[in-house]
Length: 599
Ligand code: X8Z
Ligand code: ZN
Image (cartoon, rainbow, N blue to C red; front, side):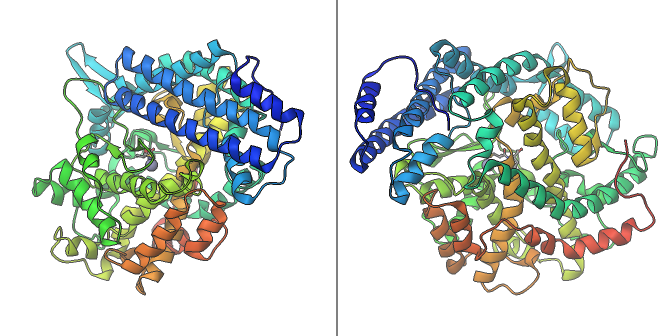
């Protein structure tokens, strides 16, 4: 790696220069790591507190303050990463070697060493996320719709005109983000290059305990494994949507219009399940209806999630979780509603920030978020640099793994359903789940295929919107509901682009959660079809899960995966096996109909 020390002098640099003058020792490395871990922990807590305020009260002042604390934390990490080259040639024990590697690879944003540029890039990061959080579509001056309102339209309306209006209304908020995003890229790439990476995408790909190019190949391999399943689902859904909307709206062999799939980004399609449900194999219950008819409160939704984890042997969430979390969208101010799980003091000040709606979708998202929180608490005895998931896909997969155990039998156990549908209804159950999990696969993949190319310059600034839709077409087989031009910036209408959160983690999680589910179901002694296995209340499965979570990122992820599944590689055979009966059924339905898409 080509690492340059920052140009400004500091006490820390004088010390490292002194060490460099002689040969550094193991004791030097340990002292260096101790100092880095102590300082970074303190900076990280300050930054989290400032970020929490900013995300739950978006105003210029909270953004400015948060940007300052973020900058202090990132600058310090960058400085320590640069200093750590001192120990590159020293033989170190595995834990110390790994910590140094993590110092270099842990950042998703690296600030440039120029203080003004560092301040500018962190300020841009904060304001891009803030602009997304504040985004609204105002069809009339006195009537404004936020993303939650628009999301409800996307989920429930069956009127193509209304859907297109909501879609266009939201995507318009991203237009003004194009210029600041470009500037952000320039500066963030500069920071990544100073750390020795080719660009920010290369930095993101270097976190996976394997050479970055090999990781990109792993992704391609996994996608090739699951693509036939996606293509079958796509063809089936397109046919059913043609029956609903007619061939003037949905082409026979072209891409599906993105606004008809029940979700603003066409990323999960389960909201249109009623439109595509199998005629004679519908499970006959709808969790949203059940939760609504029981007048379930947001806090109770979270309690259901917590109870699942405690049933596995995890300790209940601390009182501070219930006091400090945000569960409901405040009426009087802008907040970042996109759900997230927080680990403020990296011990037990865990929190959930979410604008909960009483829907089955949010029921699942709550389990997703609590998966983060229980993971965070499980690794809190590790040293600071190891307090993270085995890789970022693991963090995203844990809560989803638990949500795969939300089976009809589980709903009966917790009193939400009276009787579980019989096995003849499994096609409907599997289809509903595939609309979420299989539909998501190409989406999970393409966001960072896109950003990797933007960061590397392979997508030129003048084609940033066209390239987005080229990839949406290539991977998802969807098309925009209205003509797009380069003044648009549709990628930033997705939270993770505006907020600079890497996305490949969700693709990995989509694969991993089925691997985890298969292993835990086996541990729990479940012998039936995987979609009817629930690990609820199973202490053995809980212990197996906890053993992996406790490791944090102390060991390469391949070891963590092996400890739970016996496998050292990510393997899409679990998701393929899970949906195998559905794939067969889909292919029967698709017989004689066009498969795949041409423009
Ligand atoms: O962003 C999330 C979580 C927070 S980590 C709510 N997810 C992705 C998304 O919403 O795009 C969960 C699934 C995919
Ligand atoms: Zn998540």
